Length: 217
Image (cartoon, rainbow, N blue to C red; front, side, top):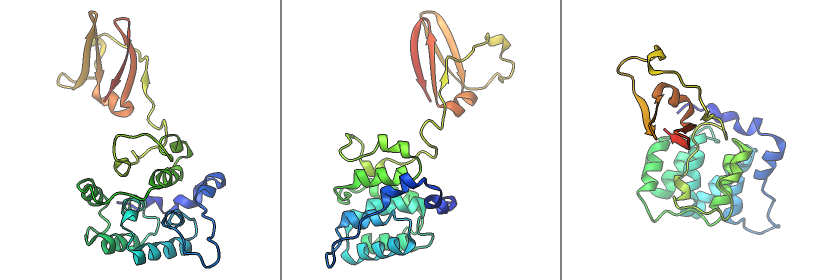
């Protein structure tokens, strides 16, 4: 995977960046795992690396889902996270983020630390602050939070096709005879939504046969 996000922490607005700045523990106090996980999102490389070493030293299994999340964005820009995952799990998938995700999905004995929802929300807010609306402390969910992944765009980055203009089938000369469409008929009103257009929008909001509909692709 291309390491395009190496500058992630550099372009985050200061107000958002402050979300990841963990306070220092009291003198002599051992940092909690929640605090260490927060430090893994810190803009300072030294702070992140020290937190990662401590997570591994403790054998903190509940840190594994978060480390897999971090591996996708490669905030460390080396093999530190992959090596930490190997040390904690005994698996050797290297930088293959997808394989780590698949492995975790097959396991029920590698649950994240209790503050994972808030932590993951902070991670996603580094991409887009609006993601905090979806993942946060106490969020209700049916899917495992560790299986929720970023889709590659910011919120509303894929605009829905809303009330599109339609043309008669004979006028759609840009389509080939064997081109795939999403077709539907409501109260005698027939519509077709070409997949080449739906590819760019993934959602269409329209009124067909007098009925408001949302078509997902």
